Image 1 (cartoon, rainbow, N blue to C red):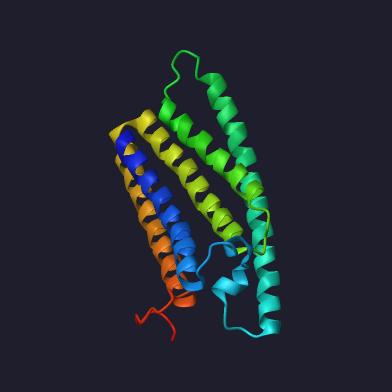
Image 2: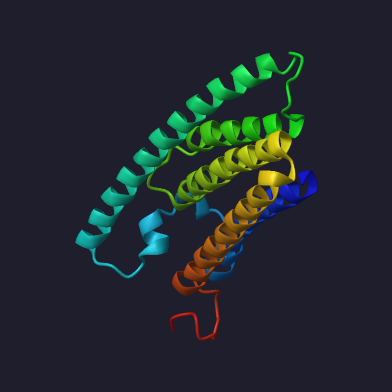
Length: 201
């Protein structure tokens, strides 16, 4: 079970990393430089063909979404810190049945939920958006994986197999979303000289 959960969470992290790598690689291929990558807004990348007024409206919407993500992450992180602290304090007691892996997943999820949005405060920028979005999904995924690991610790195969299926489904959905993000990048930010059907010409 431990190996399965670690492999699935690693796949989630890899998918998010590939999304960011695709952005920087495609940006360099299209514009010839990475210098301005961090300065491109989400509107410029995700909605490159809208007029000025729609771009302004989209930008305001994206800023509101970013602020909600920030609040959600900090709230989830604060709750997670409280839960982790209580479980860690109890871990020395006789009869404590949760594994170090379960606590480790929980700590990792809490750390990502708090650190990601705090480090990516530029609400309008595309790179900050990708960091925040990744922090939300990977952070909460790690927390859910912690719960799956706890189910295995406490019940063994009774609920552990169901927990493993939940974890696999979560990883599959996240990887599918990563692929959707990558396809959107290919559509909106084609490589220089690209002639594939998915890119505008």
